[in-house]
Length: 74
Image (cartoon, rainbow, N blue to C red; front, side, top):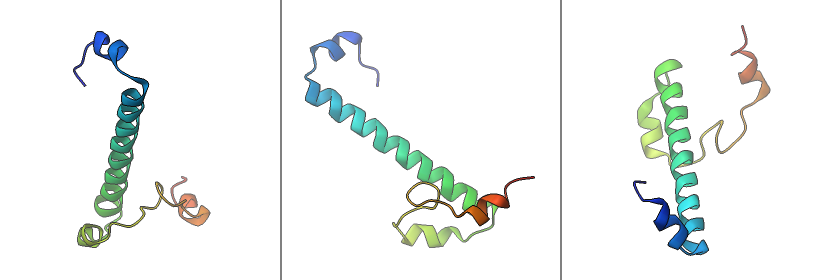
């Protein structure tokens, strides 16, 4: 984040927890973007469908079925 160590030690626990939560939210968004990328460009799904739908993404928000995972094994 570009902040020094002194900022960390001078911050309150509430602020540090908020920063950790924000980082976790960013990681979740990155994982959703990766899942949509794989669905669209690797498996040929329609990207416009994901633009309109802000629902759960398979593999991140909801578990993937075992049948879908078997197709990934060689």
